[in-house]
Image (tube, rainbow, N blue to C red; front, side, top):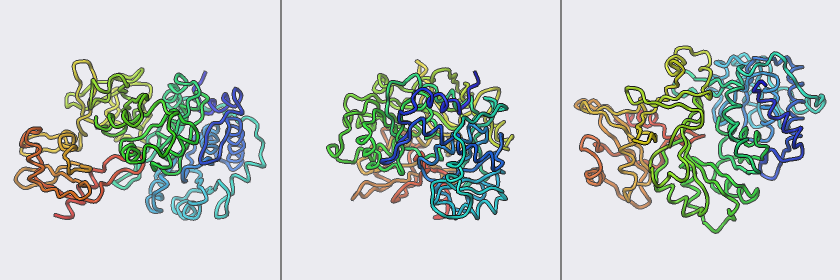
Length: 494
């Protein structure tokens, strides 16, 4: 049997047509409705000459209307290529040009801007979904006129591209991570193994890989998933209470905001799993989750868009292995290169970076994906992430991992958030700079920070420069610190 994403929706519609597949606010979409809408939309796109193998841009906010677009393109064998909904028109145009797409689909909020982007990128077909007026073909209306019969693309192969997730292009040429039907099917199949009427709330937007992976995992298990328009603490906890959710996965920065809310303001007794990962997870955050959600299980996940799941630290190892991201996930091989870079091999790896053989060859070597993360393995094989290959600071001939310095200073009583970067220095090559968001009312000075670090860090690892900021720049979807942007800002200050 070919592992095709469209088959997930066909089979769930046959097995549990009335069961809820997805919710957003008060709206719900059943498996039967989702499959029918996907078929209708797919036939409508086919009549508009969208074909197997063509790339189709989706530009829109998280909505239930995005789901039939995803289903339709999977069944057609066209490649779903979402653009970050928060991008401006210039950034969107750069990615659309690079994608060489055959069609551009937008939601009502982006339809007007999409017209200019599609024109600038020479994309022949512009359509919109979700109602409203504006430029482009009203695809929702066209779909309702079409048949809901099952859409089958005989030429479709499981190794064909299914999706492309693009970088924003803000730091240079965009990279497009190409994932096949087979890879996305395998990445999400663990959801079927975890089935049993789980109810998941998803914090990730639907231009991000994690949102679709969580969704596909729920759908393979014939379970519902709840999306939110924005990952605020209030929206996520409202969704958990309303849907009696059993699982909430949040990045550490979002959990931190949730932990600041009133514990008695929501009924969250339905939760059984409060998972995290994606960026560094401080042990104190895990302890806080255990206090706030007693009786729940927590897993720490480490992976990437390019490599899928890499490691998992289960609940029973949280106290025993603080700071670790665990052991290799099922069917994953892991090793460290001679330079300490984390490398993984599995059936979950991307096919390539779209139209970028040089970048592909750099990270996919002899079947191993080179993550760009620096790691260490303990005597039991548990992995810890100690930094990024390109983030390493080289000062006076010494090598320093920024995350090691961050961990040593993060619990200083006057530090709210901290990021450590290397900045150029004529004498040392680079020096360690601590960029700190101080706690409210705190007065933090460099010498105090260095004294705090004396028993924790070697002298060459201690910060030689301190910058106080109101907030750290983070990626919008995953909350990871944008170190390159921090360095640019510091350089502009001199």
